[in-house]
Length: 349
Image 1 (tube, one colour):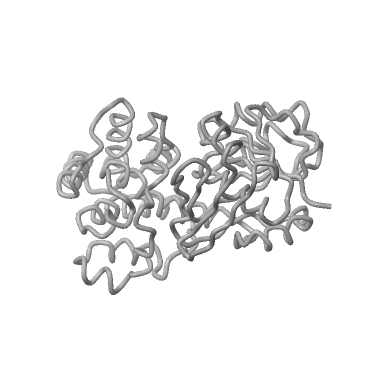
Image 2 (cartoon, rainbow, N blue to C red):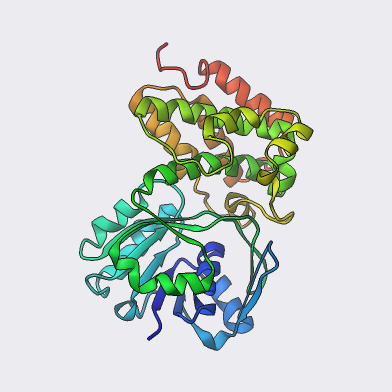
C-alpha cells in the first residue's frame, strides 16, 4: 500500500519534495495557495535538477486543496509553510488528524517543530530541513538548483516511509539530534538576506568578494553568539563554519579554487527570500537573522550586523531598495558594526 502524504504549504520546496514522493508512488495531496495549485492542476509537475534529472507527474497522480480537507487519511504530513504561518496552518489539522500521525517540519529557522508539537501533542512531530534550493521556473516546473538532501530527526515512526524516500531520491538523512544541523544551516542561510538585497542569482552574488564579506560579517557575529550560548553546529561544508567564514573573504579567484563546491549552483537559483520579495510577501528574516539577534540579547552578545540586515530586509518588504551593490551593502554592515561595537562583542563591553 502506498504512503498517503499531505504537504502543508505547497510552495517551491513543498511542491518539489511532494512531487518527488509522487514520482516514487506516494499518494500526495498538496495544500497551498491557488497561484501554484491552479498551475499544477492544469499542467502537472515537471521536476528537474542541476544533475540532469527530469521527471513529470501528471495532474491525475496527485490531489490539491486550498485547505487540509483530508487530514484523517494522511500517514505523513510535511509542514512546509513559512515559519510565521506555522501555528495558524497547523491548527487547521488539529481537529481531524489521527493520533500517532508522523508530522515533519521542513522549515527554515529553529524551533518550528516545538510549535507544532504543542498544537499536535498526540502526533509524532519531528524536526526536518530541506538542505537544497528550489526554484520555480514556470507553471508546474520546479528545479533543484543546489546539492543537498532532506535531513530529519531519526525516529522509529519513520520506518514505513524510508523506502518511498529512497525511491524518490531525496537523500533522506536521519540524525539523532537535528539541532546542530539546523544551526549550521541557519549560518548558511544568513546569505539569504544578502542575496535578496543584491537582486542577483545566488552564484553571481557569491562570486563577488564584497557580498561574501557581508556574509562573513554576519556569520562571525552569529558564531560569537553561538559560542557564548554553548551551542554546537554540525559541519555542512568542506570547511568547518569558523574557517569557512574566513575563507569567504579571500579574493575571487582564490575563493573559486578553495571553495569551488560553494559555487556549484545552478545559474538561475535565487534564495527563497529573494522570491518572497519579488512576490510581495513577508520574508523569514526574523527566523534567520532575527534568531541570532534574539539569542544574542539572551546571552549578552551584541549583534549589530544581523540587526542591520533585518532592518534592510524589512525596508525591502515595504518597497525599499533591493539592488544593493556588494560595496554599498558592505559599507552599511560595517557602519552598523561600528555603531554597535565590534561585531559579536559582549553587550556593554
